[in-house]
Image (tube, rainbow, N blue to C red):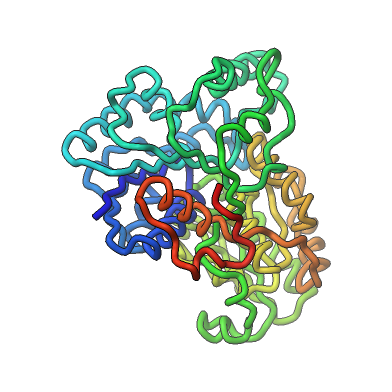
Length: 416
């Protein structure tokens, strides 16, 4: 029986959603797989809801969502400030990893954006007691202000990021997975006299496409979904901001825009999904708006709606795009990673981008009225990332070849 330690790092719910999807596919190949998890809230909520084995040590895993919320101001987040704050807890996480792997033996370690382990393994290779898979969805930091300290901090981070490439040595991970396509990595340098980001990714990472916990083709029957979710047949707008409290301003904007929308869209129903870290009682909700907390399988609700209004995170926006639904998205301002996501969405012709700080309730209502139910023609999104990731992991580390049904999945790239 193969034993895996999966550390689901980073912020919110997007990362753990794809992590669970990858493990689900891996279990189809290796049915005897045993997986232990380390993750903080709210990822821990999703893992428990999915029936996964969350280790007791997870209670002491540093919470990056808290660090991000503390670094945020309204609907803006300086990601460099967040990373600087989060990195103060890296020593804690590394020590927790040390204790966990000393108590139990693992055949494989999988980390989703666990940068602290990359740095720790460079300093002390003895910490790494099993092969490691590292999952990325962006490469390198970008400057988001004119502050010289931001420029300097970004350069230092990017120099550290590209260290292995610059010194022409192999990375400390044994397999790197990039959630997306080659063209999703900016074709530019990490910084002055630093290497090219796309060249770095091509050398060290496998491009797996996008990871979804569902098959988009199974969610084309909106009527059936609405019956299941008890939404009725009227026009439906779903508003969601994911797994942190950073998006409360956007939800306030949606609630304030509803009366303007309702006057122009008879019978309109709006559903606001707060997620696990926003208190629903804080909202003043107009009549006709329903508010929910944490919603498992949120993609089903996206599939049932006529319009989604969300932040600019990759997971939610690409799920909605894969489902072929019209949506309006508001990247967190100052968050360069979500700016990169917006560039990807533009290439796919998906979604309408707006700015929370520059949008009034009337502005949002006008955009919603012109977008709801709109016929869309997004470019096809490669949706087999979970299968490809599972195939690569099973083949390289678990001595398993995927079954024919998995290998022949539509659009699945061949193993290298």
